[in-house]
Length: 132
Ligand SMILES: [Zn+2]
Image 1: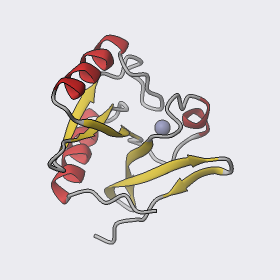
Image 2: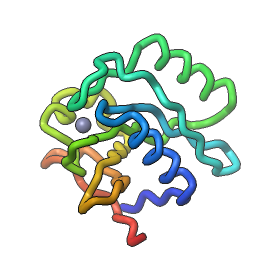
Image 3: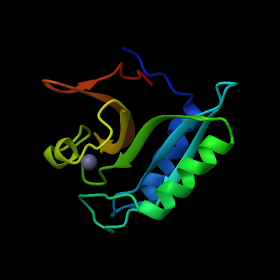
């Protein structure tokens, strides 16, 4: 399965992750009917370098905004400022939206990258990696 994103969207999420480091950042990615992607940062209530929990009030406000704009929620992103580039065991336990694509921004080989994952019975499946 592929999960292709425009470079500008990937750069935007990576920029948020870099700026938020050393803490984890998180948020939603929505898509409009005209296939335009929109990034919605949400406060990490834990202010933690290895875990995140979306601020419930901000999350609700963003949900409403996405709905009122006729957009669709397509992915949940968060960062791993100290790696790894794949979901952690905590992510697995605290995955409240198992059907949703997860995006993780993390430094990999000295460069920040954004990878997409989908939860399956056997663990997280990495979706098509971007060659760039
Ligand atoms: Zn994580």
